[in-house]
Length: 275
Ligand SMILES: [Mg+2]
Image (cartoon, rainbow, N blue to C red; front, side, top):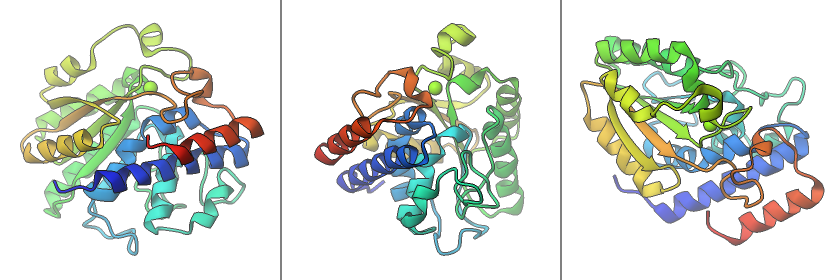
């Protein structure tokens, strides 16, 4: 895949600034888990997804389901910067009546393919969409971004079994393996259970990558798209809060609002360096 890593890195930095600013202005939101998926989101929207921002409901478009819906600021920023709606709307995050609710709502926000927030549902919904792609012969791919914590939900594995049974080669699932969930580490809450062997046992094509390496993200998608007879899991190692040093791996930033000083520090750091 021909990609411009410099352009995507700039896009990711723009998204990170939007995430911090949206949460700061809204005085509510989830910066840590949005920052961990930012490089994946930037790569998908820049170079991977076959989409038309001028026609959000084009029925041949690739679908993206953000199963970890609380990370929606990353996707809202990407959608705005791609032209689905004006970036001037971003400060309306979580406002009453806004198109940018605290979790994604498909009938409110142009470019949002699925309502989410109730954790665990995204992969199973992706199975339905990938079946539709096969049955209608429209040939679109279905991408799901799931957290590692939500893999504790049983419906994930019902979906994983169905996806393999129906040989859903157009289903590509990113697991944002940041090691944390709302309450603590995933291991502490749910017990240690390696992710890749689980997907492999269900018959999936599996890859492990650095979820902040843009070229690795694009290459993994390319390999997944070549797997036409089975679903793909891309297990991406990420850092919660990535890009803002005082938020990195500090789980208090799962849902927390920066002070004015912290906001200014974050924006300064994100302006200075590539992430
Ligand atoms: Mg997590």
